[in-house]
Image (cartoon, rainbow, N blue to C red):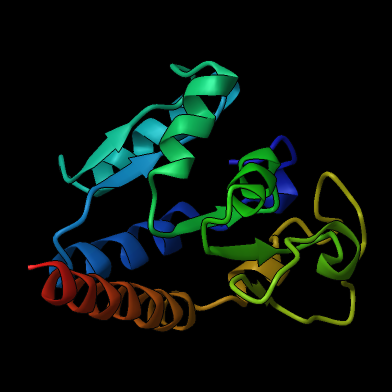
Length: 167
């Protein structure tokens, strides 16, 4: 989650993407956020019916970095953890609403940015003036899921090839 309500992709979209990835890959989904995000993150965890680990509000900054560093992929709002994951070299699928990804990253070829690309973007408002966060609702879970599948499939191929070389 992000400190700005206007930066948060809908929980149902996160849940749909997570369910589809969990159905396809032997993975663990970690839900990360601060103490202020605990209720929203618990709601997301409920939507995933015990198939995710909710760590919202439970990690120190070094612990957060440790979890992020171990990930194969981070799907995240424009937030501090997005920047930490990118800095650690973890592929990031970044979901941008009211801010401009050209200005606030993540930077690097391994990251992908999703944006609703509405005429009101970027507005840099903490609350959507239209009340609907349409810019983030315009990012379809199917788009994010497809990009995640591509990255995770490539990781599986690389891991298989590495195991064959060492085995």
